[in-house]
Image (cartoon, rainbow over the protein chains, first blue to last red):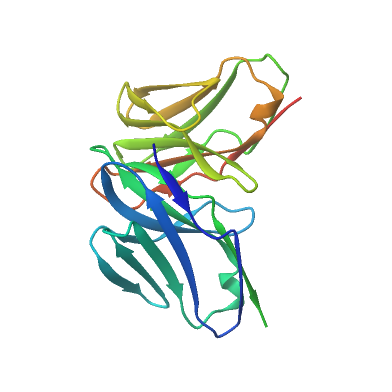
Length: 110
Length: 112
């Protein structure tokens, strides 16, 4: 089966940079995604990495190392609205089943 | 915009009842998913469907079954609801060769 590990909570200061790590174990790995979920809301897609390296989307970047089964989400210029839970997810298998981690609750403080 | 619609936002059922949770997507996505979300446990995959009438078990399929008779609709069935199935249920869909999954707003199910 699949397993993903990420820290349960992170606190960071407004304007700072924060990195949320994710390690995974899976067979038939296809790619690593990141999702954001605000309290009471549905998860929304942030980024995806299928190949090694860094993908940048505005203030958010995501990194993947397939050989290390490791990825991270980097959030820059933190804003209060970034306070949310962040989930890494692996796509695996021929039909790209998506399995999620347990989530990291990010609290941005003034 | 892609829309994934779950039939109920809140649901209260009695122990032993058969419960149907419905999910409809309007973007012709091949893949559809049912997850349950509990505090501290993240999103756990119950079942996954990659085509009409095709399904795969996820990590926690016990006590659940699914039905996908049409491409746009994916139903989650609790054969005999139990209190430990009280949870938030999230449906999602995606194109098979695309990276983004789209989620419905969730159904908060309480079994009493």
